[in-house]
Amino acid sequence: MTERTMRSASRRAQHELSEKEDAVFGGRVSANTLADLSGELYSVAQLLVGQPRLRRTLGDPATSPDARAGLAEQLLSGKIGKQALELVKAAVEQRWSTPWDLTDAIEGAADDALFAAAEKNGALDAVEDELFRFERILDGQSEASSLLDEASVPAERRLTLLDALVEGKVGAVTLELLHHAVTSQRKRSVTLAIDDLLEKAALRRHRSVARVTSAVELSDEQRTRLSAVLSEIYGREISVRTALDPAVRGGLIVRVGDEVIDGSVATRLAQARSAIAG
Image (cartoon, rainbow, N blue to C red; front, top):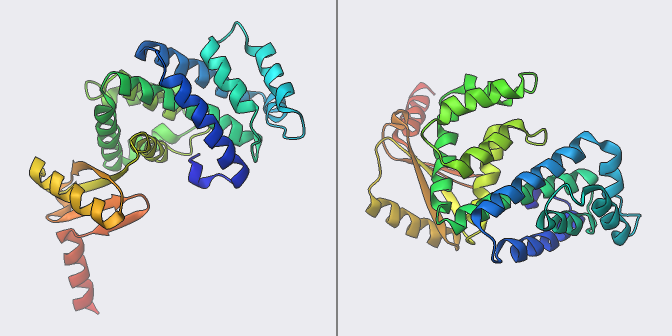
């Protein structure tokens, strides 16, 4: 769940947790440690998904924050690392609108830890590109996308399909993010999960992402100019991610968040045919 879809109590809680994340991830911690931390947080989120009573207890705003944090420490101490436990305790101390928001926040912290690992390795741009390009692969393979989303298909089979689709195309951080997006019971679909991940990656550098589809590859100069134009339009820095689709024929399709600017030749031709038929 992204922060924009949370209710007010959870938005405030997410803000507090994000500050704690920044303190942990921005410290003297290696990329490998952050990757391990991410795995531990994913495991805690999975535990809460599978244990409804525990999830409700840790997310119950009627109990004291200290009591909830104490219970988390009692259950998890020695099973996860010190930094992961600090983040889990920070999460359960907050007041969430629903226990599910708590679960999603811990899962989101695991995603953030992987992005922080990529950032420390200077690979955040590469991760963004890989996520975007995989999203485009799924756009062109609806059957594969449906299989990856199908909860009745065993997780092992879905992961095998995913690995075949991305073999040689993504690095370790992107692969781990996608693995979790496919197997998590809290992700509505892989495509929506990738959208959320791209938004997270952009927010780490206080910018937004424009997903641009064109019939031919844009030059570096064209991407730079397009980024500048979009940044001026939206009043914030816009990072451009491009993908090819011959079906657009010419022009561009630009998506920034939920807004789509369709300047493709294919769409203009379709509009012309519709006008003539009318």
